[in-house]
Length: 208
Ligand SMILES: NC(=O)c1ccc[n+]([C@@H]2O[C@H](COP(=O)([O-])OP(=O)(O)OC[C@H]3O[C@@H](n4cnc5c(N)ncnc54)[C@H](OP(=O)(O)O)[C@@H]3O)[C@@H](O)[C@H]2O)c1
Image (cartoon, rainbow, N blue to C red; front, top):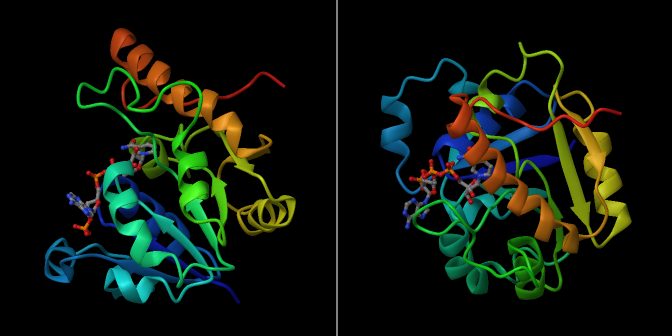
């Protein structure tokens, strides 16, 4: 059995930890402040193991549910512990106005994280899945598409297999450079959601 670690207890961290707590894998959920998690009295929290950030790096698969800049600050410290492991990158490197990305079109957060962690298998996933869609994913029909990217076919195949029971349609979306588009699709989805009054309950589903 694999161990999956979700790092961060914000909106995405909570949604992902909850979703994964329903599956067969052991889930570590890392926070800087376990007391605030206990105080939230989440009914499913006993299905995961709360831990510190550094302890989460023992897992086989690590999902940092952190903002891009916070993750990049921490990456030099994580490098050795993450060698040979899978890091699932969910980040969109938004600017402070949330109307554009901090990175230009010649790269993406996923590629920059892979560049900073050359010994780790970075897999892009859940970048277009807003937190409220994660929360309601078990009740919504049709399920949302989730684009899965990696430069390495093996970890991507492993994740597609591991996540097959989750209520999303996971699509192999090619290499990490496709996150130049996928991350910008999140900017567009956010704007469309706000324009039409659906944000943050908006997601992509290709007509195929
Ligand atoms: N929001 C969405 O719908 C959505 C959708 C797709 C992708 N994403 C991506 O998911 C990532 C997390 O987004 P989010 O909406 O979950 O963010 P959030 O609610 O603000 O949570 C971020 C978490 O990061 C941790 N953290 C670590 N260092 C921090 C620092 N210096 N300042 C503040 N928090 C710090 C905190 O967890 P602890 O206090 O437990 O340590 C915090 O709860 C982002 O990269 C975002 O682009 C978000």
